[in-house]
Amino acid sequence: MSISQKAPGAAEESPNTPWTLDAVRAAGVDGLAQMLGDVGFILEELAKEPGDLFETRATARSHLAHLLVSEQVIRGAQDALEAHTVVALAEVTRREQAGAARNAAAHEDAAVPSSSVLDKHADGIARRDLSLIARCSPSAAGSSLASARRLVLSMPNMVTALATRKIPAQVAYAVAGATSVRDESQRHEVDEILAQRLPRLDGAGVRQWQAEVATAIMELDPEGAVVRHRRARRRRGVTLTPRENGMANIYAQLPAIDARLLHKRVSLEAERRRAEGADDGHGALMADALVDTVLGREGAMEAVELDLGVIITDRALFRPDSGDAAQIEGYGPVPPEAVRAQLRSATALPKDSEQDPFGADGPATRAVIRRLYTHPTTGELVAVESRGRAFPPAMAKFLTWRDTSCRGPFCNAQTRQHDHIIPFARGGPTSVENGQDACAHCNQKELDTLSVERIDDPGHPGHRVAWTGHAGITRVTGPTPLVRPPRSAAPDTTTTTESAATKAGTPERASPGDAPPGEISPGHAAA
Image (cartoon, rainbow, N blue to C red; front, side, top):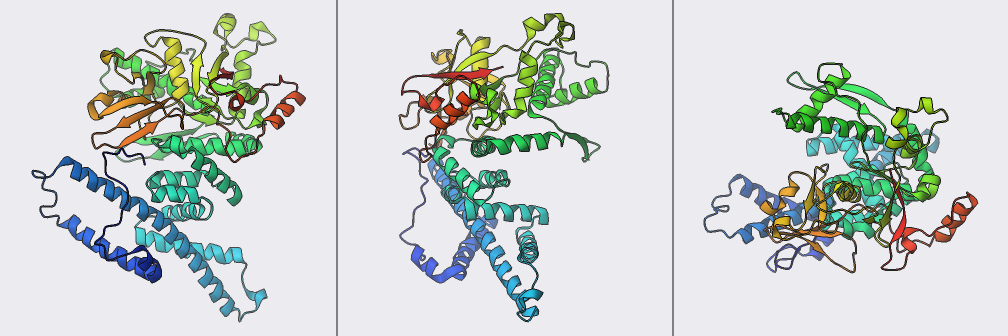
């Protein structure tokens, strides 16, 4: 957690506490439970009957901010302790069930059920106990148990980040869930990768963390990513879920690029209807546009050509097993296999011009491949060949491709606007350096933050923006790297990659991470 020097917030031991770290450890689980019970009783009574504790007339704002930070300290530590407790409960249950099975079989090994059967039964018991204690469904309890086990057994860096408030529980469990397709050793590698990227993810929301996990998995197992994508494509479908008050949800499982195009089309149609005077909200108008078009009603959307940013390295375009993820504007990372077919169909001339899906205007409307440039150490987009002023289309598109989603701390919203970091009214230039993508809410940052400013940190280069609230808490956000810098502990794979590219018949070229400091690495195609 990034906290400015003016703000309170670090966990610290009170000199008057009756508990010490050594005393609690020596007392074991029962001692920890007693301490938490004592603290829990006091907090529970205060919550029910706070008295004049929250009387605001004589309370300074800074004191309430300090209290709020201290509550977050407790929450982070409690979340990490709970993960350890849940895993320990499950392990003890397994041990007890195995012992009971051996006793029932009179210690005859042949009569003892297999360990997998015993473990499944024990986990069911632990899941039910967790469900009853935490007041959640058995399904949710089972998911929590599985994620906690991954965290505690395979992802120590994420547990430490959870305990020290660098990530919330929602992020920790989302990361653990996203690594369910990996085995323990691979999950540990993902944990190491995420630990190195932790400083850059200070203000990242759940969506960006999930994207980081997906990218790390693609780096470690590019061939597996291709297989998983092809398997996922076969699960395309549409389902209906009844909701309350006469409403329902329609859920469509689609390839990412098709889903993003569909979402963008109905969003643009909603903006058009609002401009013509429609009173309903943006989401409601998107739903209306989708229904009108699918059911052939009056007001159905007409076919149009949409401009969607798909960014992919030339390496991944020709060699999908290179480990470089592709990026879809407004969506995030996908395996290169997910976009290569669309890019080929969009850019290749058909053998028969009369069968061109773009018709007579095919040559003019066909997707244009544009060269972009990335920073040599961060992998972020830093330049584009086209130039402009006042966020012209080329610059606005560049911001969207670079940022991929709203740059507000922990905001998972789609980008809707291009924002001046230093407001234009205060002399801020209209430039890539002073620009960022934002949702409508975060674009009103001047109303609810103390300051938002670009920062230069030699230890963490790139386009980084510090958001400081009125409580003195600062969070730093950065764009999603399109190419991840090499891991510090990882061996240099440049030679292997280049040799493979040469054997494949593609031009030999250095990876973005190989450029000398201060230079810019070309080699990324955007359709």
